[in-house]
Image (cartoon, rainbow, N blue to C red; front, top):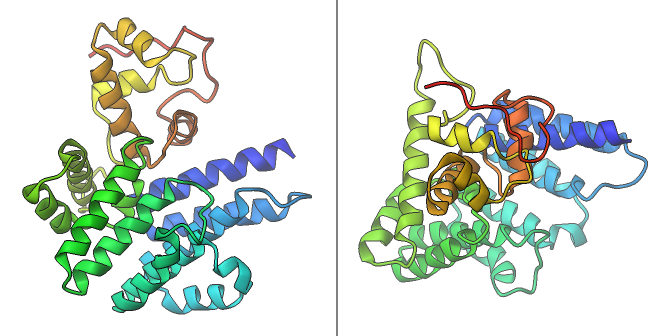
Length: 287
């Protein structure tokens, strides 16, 4: 059982990375592979529902609205009332130009009556509410919602949602009007700009948003048990610098946690498939 679970996690992480880059076809293939692996398990796995939700988002991004509707119609009504399914339905309503219904779908999520599996999904809910409110001509409500989205996203570095549902104009306007998350907005806008550049045709197109040399140096320490201050000491930089590189890594790899970053980095061959011993990372490459 361990092998299918591990492979399922890898495909799930790969799908998130691909979807954050706007590669909906590749993301959909990864999520469907993860679903097939989940069905092989003798017991329902906690990732089964998140995989289904992310599959919906990939279908929405690909423009296959009919497939989304069929998948939702085949979902038990009780399950559809859960927060993460309401969020996916709201994304669908926005995709078909119906922001009013999107706001209605999100209401129970935002007031806490429809629970979500992972708290970071609240950032996505508030972000979609901001986008819908802005489309409805209510900039004040959009501003309040985007601030809440940033507030929910910042502690865990849950910035993947801002790549999944890009709203650069809304974020730029919010930054001009005043926010407690100005630095966070700048990081999101930078990540969005890199994604836009990355999807342009190139002779040597990379399969992910490229990491800087400094980010790669920090990445090589993540499979170890070293803390951020210890990594900072190893690299002779400040803890703030390490945390900044970590946040950028999470954005570019489309993950929320250190363990997920390691898994995704291994999938993308950025680090060795097996981790070195604690406190002994692979030596950084020469500049």
